[in-house]
Length: 388
Ligand SMILES: Cc1cc2nc3c(=O)[nH]c(=O)nc-3n(C[C@H](O)[C@H](O)[C@H](O)COP(=O)(O)OP(=O)(O)OC[C@H]3O[C@@H](n4cnc5c(N)ncnc54)[C@H](O)[C@@H]3O)c2cc1C
Image: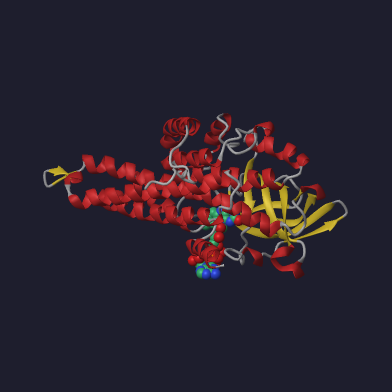
């Protein structure tokens, strides 16, 4: 006997608006992002002009409410934007993700009215690029071990310390910075601040040479008696750890989307190549070994994308989504690595050269297993929520 239909508590198909956004961004990425991606990677050049064009389309304020000049879109739309941009350039993808979900989102969620009015329109217009500064030389997975300090002096916080591996570090204008305001309180003694790069005592340190995502500049940030107005404290003193964790939950949906985009690009390239490349008098696509790699890549990508949509859907419904975001990020990043390894294999020797896109994808994929929580950290989050 059939029971009543129970609505599925996840979204398996994009609605009309989400489809329209995906198609618009796909077209934009093909026209504006793809042609310059290899060159920017080679030169380690930040995609400034692309970001200006993206700002005009509203893509730097995707999740920012319309009243602050943003597009006010949902998280699934945001995920499709990051996926389609990353499909053509993973560097531009991560800049978009960090700007929206690690810089704008904590202001949307925890900001005061004046903070929202002051900073969100600037981020939405892309006048300033956003960054998130949590990691320190001795505080990576263990963010609670950070040593940067902030203390109130008159109407200003004085911040001292340094951050490392900050995406968009050399270019960012608005940075969410985390610092210790009460050492004795441990992680509950961390606070979050909205910092502007023009503030006295703010300095960009070394820019890292990296394996991949070379066009997304990654640097140290150094704070020497940096003066931050008291009103730039985000949330209350002591809220920093909570804000960091909640922000990273959402950020992981962005990185999972970046990983799906990289994996999809690896599949796109592999299908094209396998149909063209002839060996033993036939296209290599006619060999079962190649067909199975293509089938496995496509299946994992589809599964990863649904995990992303599921986490995004729960976030939009206001439900807890930490576990789902961790699952999406873990599975999508491992899918990206699996896909790029197979893609290079399908391309044979040519895939090992810079003549072919899969070489860049191979280098770009690895970071998705590391930042915004390594795969080990994602497994800790998932198991922690199951074993509590
Ligand atoms: C290109 C790039 C961009 C980045 N962008 C940003 C940014 O914009 N903002 C920002 O704040 N940070 C950023 N990061 C930092 C990134 O989030 C950290 O590198 C990451 O969280 C890991 O920290 P870590 O490098 O110190 O590694 P560690 O924490 O030292 O980890 C080293 C290894 O030990 C494992 N490990 C650690 N603890 C445990 C444990 N308890 N159990 C099991 N295994 C464990 C890790 O999984 C990893 O395999 C970026 C990093 C890179 C490389």
